[in-house]
Image (cartoon, rainbow, N blue to C red; front, side, top):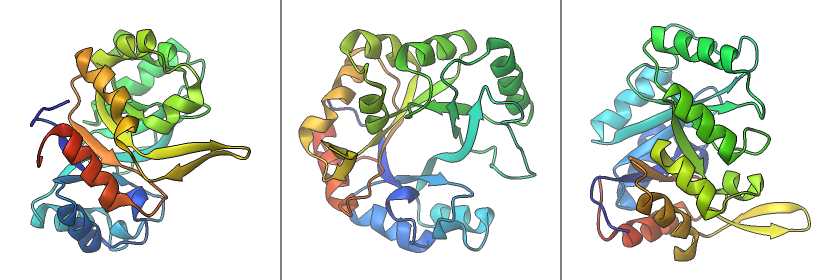
Length: 235
């Protein structure tokens, strides 16, 4: 797995108490080149407002790979656009209900596009499974964010399903997890966790970014694992 076109970095969910400048420094320490950002989740990067936080990342020379809001496509009135939020300059990560109504999803995607927003749907517990998500993506041309935990929780992260999803994958959120009697728990990322990314890339996935989203407190080390697997320092 080696391609210099893939950006690497951190999710604000890895360091929710970090200001924009602190998060930027953490990314740079880990050799990354960008961030993915949650909006409206109480993360400290936006404590002075979304626009101010974004300006901090630009000043640090970092990319914003995508932002994330809690919209669930397929739910009535899921798309809630406020002026400037989410910003239309970056793709916006959303969720999708397990059995989406095609007409409603089409209308919601059209509403977002009219506002200048490009939506990417995340693999996520309680959402559409991989094959359903692949069908939605193929039908409507929407991108996908593969969350590695979301794949595990969906229970169908087999090679054929990933191959079908691959053409639509725009980003990956990487994290190490282990299964316990109480469910999945975060742990440090290891190289083998990225094998699924290898499958996606081998199937032609146009991945733009891989970011670390962890609660294990190992974000810098995890980022180094990704950078090493990619074969060098990336933007």
